[in-house]
Length: 147
Image 1 (cartoon, rainbow, N blue to C red):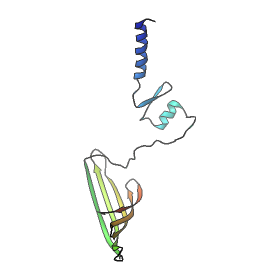
Image 2: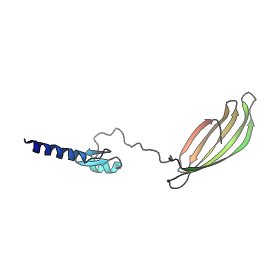
Image 3: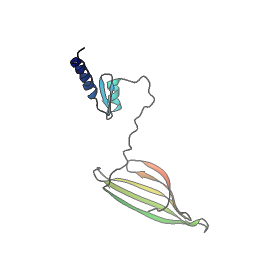
């Protein structure tokens, strides 16, 4: 085989391989990228013979990212009980509302948190739960500043 013909075959093979982007994979002769949905991958490649994972882990949609933002927060404390002097001072019912807007993101994100705060010798202890504007819910506790 001549050197020129061998070089042409190598260049053609490299050109076929270089056509695929770094964030894509081949399924037979078809090209599948990371952005493709599960339905599109199944349409292109067919059903898998074995399936060990049936979901794709993606970044949660309720997290906001950016360095340009507006955060509004407010709350209300209401006295409930007095604690014994060794444990702390008082227990309060707390309601807290937050709203945030990140530059470039559409709309405002908001949530409401309700719980109990005890003034202990270690600092304020908050135990409660929150609900976000898209129905996200969490139970949590926090030791430290409440507002």
